[in-house]
Length: 191
Picture 1: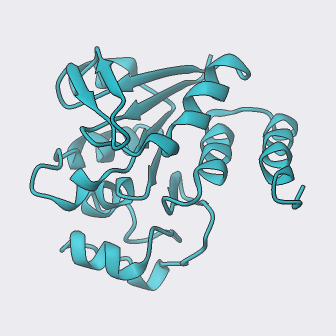
Picture 2 (picture 1 turned 180 degrees about the vertical axis):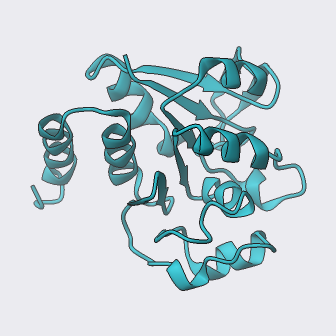
């Protein structure tokens, strides 16, 4: 069973993980587990109180095939967890590393966006919040998720394409991913 680790922080964006966790577990049988800097309770941006039982040490023991860093305004503050080494080690071990919205800042700080095509909320967002970011020449600005070299990025407005890219990286069959994309696009007459 494919393992996906989801990193949540206080004030995480409610809409960015729902499809990943809900459909990943229930419909695709993926082992989706949640992690935070420290185990405990905190609230989402929308006020949902969550209890995350596993910390970053447990995440390393979990050995996911894909790790998804969920956005939230904390990533733009000094209170953001420093997960640079964690992301680098997992990526070097072969795990796909994914970030959406503010989560892309964690990838930028880890140097994972320096050499691969990527997107985010916009280029000034990355440059203004990740001082050592060197990937401007590879920034795509696409309104949907990008996947390149084991790195997945998406703006906060693209949770469906982000989820599909993570599913692909986790080994969900191309047919099932295509069905998921079609279902999400159908609402907009794009399927």
